[in-house]
Image (spheres, rainbow, N blue to C red):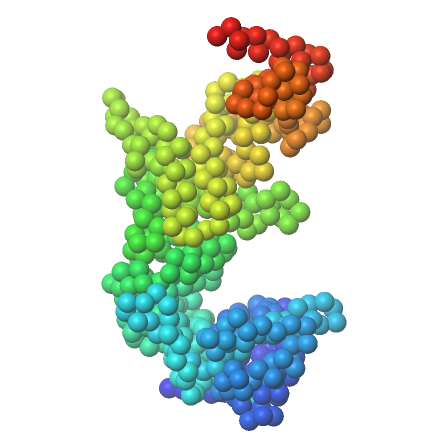
Length: 487
């Protein structure tokens, strides 16, 4: 039954419709030309959850060519039309306090997929109620007509919102068939909102997971990113695996359920990974810290740090299980999966390197490093140093209190040594005491492989010994060169 009512929103935490005078103004501009306009989706949901939002989504009875001039007039500080082929135009204006308010307006529509196409087809609709019926979940199928502030909730979204339930407005099989990406959005909302998927919807999702293969890697990646950057990434990952979606979009993760974790023999590696994610999130910093939350690089590394274990598992004598070189194997697997999901090159390389280095510190616990080893650790980690330390701490999930204390103390000690060394030298600018031109001049050689070998040797010498006087560096270069000549 269609629910129409005047929405009375009591002020709470300073949130009410007075926060959005732009919505009222825009509604009046559309009404003046005879068009309907309604605030829809996330902004309405957030309003009922008493959350602030400055990005406002609207739908309208007008076509883009009919309302473009209205939006250009409204958006005195910006206008864009990248979504024109989908019926969407956007605009932005700044308030006097500097706050940016962005609006996007879309013609009533439906998105459907051709069974053999990865791209949705856009069909315009005629009514607000029809537009809402084609949305992903009831909690996003609510609208607020503006400027009159008439609340429209044809599918009981407000009730589902109060219960924390995700349910599709129409039959879930039809909904997921129309747009398979909605299955990914379901698990994303589990993470973002802390909701549960209603049983009939969950059953349809599980039965139709193969349909996700029609969706482009970029759209799947974007949902994964939103899920991982949420307040509850673990809940989203667990829902992704439980639904069967992960078997298709991220098969390395459910594969971890089959493995034994060497730290918790009664638990699998998947459970260990979920704990690591929780711990990594807790170790992120505030906006002024070295790893401001939420940090996608750290969270992806936490998720993928052990994906090499299934391929490296070996059963040893005495009932022990080993995973030798799972760090290196996992790094290669990480690079392959993130490339398949079309993450950018820097993210692929950074996350892969964190996976590759995540066991590096364990040697320090067994025997404290020399200063040269500490320098190498920092040099190899480079800009990932702070994230690597947090990933390493998060990975130490032993229940043995003594071992946990020893590990934490060793990490504290190593970090202090790094701080002490950084007071004496600039780790970020560690170079050999002699550069390439000086090496060629001193040895009397031309550019070539030998210069590279000499440079690499002098860099190793620098890492081992710290900065030295020029004459000491020259003596070492000559010693090395004579050794090369004698071979």
